[in-house]
Image 1 (tube, rainbow, N blue to C red):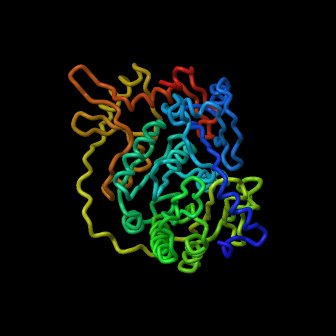
Image 2: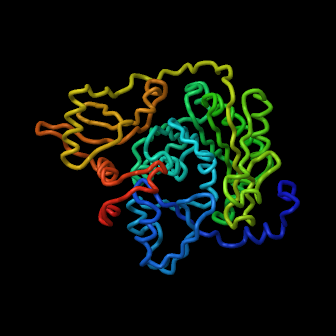
Image 3: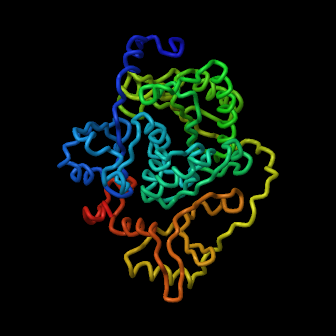
Length: 415
């Protein structure tokens, strides 16, 4: 660890920081409420909220009533008005959208439990499309639960080894986040057992997987697109060396986009290469690593995968049928943006993000969009998920992904 740490940082300060309790932090879900309205809503609770410098919606939180009511059990959390997310884990998405970038098709390669996927969706204002992948089957369920709680409609879930996407979906994405599986050296403040199975050998094995994942992600990225690579570990083998390996393999096709201007204090964690290597003592948060890369030209594709996806089980609604659903939805206060389209499976009516239609038939989805309604002889039976359309109907989201939006009433927040 001493070798990985810059000389201007104190190893004693590092040890002291790792022994302090981790500050809790939250991110306001701007798909359901603006930051200003959230602060007004929770003002009577006397929560002490300190802004996170790299995320406008992020706050460190201190509460006097934690023992009486856990933060995760509050009505505001259960209804999706905020996400409990460690402050440093907000950095990768901040990097993904730096310099005013607004990609239309994004992939989150290792998405569960959903903190970064939901942050991406909020930055996109529920527009465009996100492919959120998770290798662990049990964690896909948690990912879907958090996406649903946060009122997100522009996500498709997949359950694959992330190394398949370079071959399966070559140069399909405007932006990709690879928050890679890692040794977790940066999370000891939250999880004292994080390093229980740590060894140099396991780190080396993990690094091999990381090299393969970043190569696959780079193949799936379109020319001109942005790739953010991040981990919650601190050693160079899983961080700088993984990124430098990609730079060495494709020297004419990739460039580093320095992160020194990502937020005012970013220079305190900036490496010579332009990456952020956040040690716990710098910002009093978990350790994290973030690198931002740009693909400059196309590269040779990988061999096409040999598996069969199967027939896509949905069919798009015809114009007249779509018009009938839209009119019936409007009559009960439901509406959605033009970049969502209606599809049907048996009696089910689904709302899919149009930006992901190009991927249909190329990969198998575990879940996509939201189930809007079921047809019956008297019309439509609206599903619980369709209520998210009602929330958005009462708002006027701005170009900032909802931060300038308006929600009708407090009851709407908690409905």
